[in-house]
Length: 155
Image (tube, rainbow, N blue to C red; front, side, top):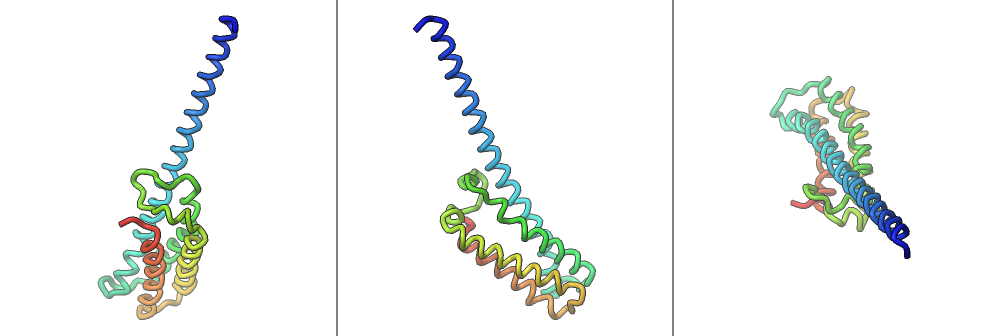
């Protein structure tokens, strides 16, 4: 091999390594972004469920407009959870997601659907909901969250 050909081969190898490293960096960045996304969705859910739980427990006054607003937010957020768990986003530092999510994706998806159904039920009823009806509906949402956390979230 001539000197020129050796340099071309070496340049091609280096270029390939740079492209590969960049691609791996992008994949890591995508996985980290997915973790940040899903953590944000869960924070949004927590932010909106908290006041409803306080009302349901009698720790805060029942506010029909607040119930309606937060129920709609919860319903909207509940539809976005699954997209925060793409393949390759497991094992990212700072994530509480267990590998079982990707090992039993069907069950994970079923649990996400259960949350969406409970959230939609609350959102649909929110406009005419009475104070004594809030507790069971918020409790149903809490149970769907717990079911998923029990199986798929690290302590």
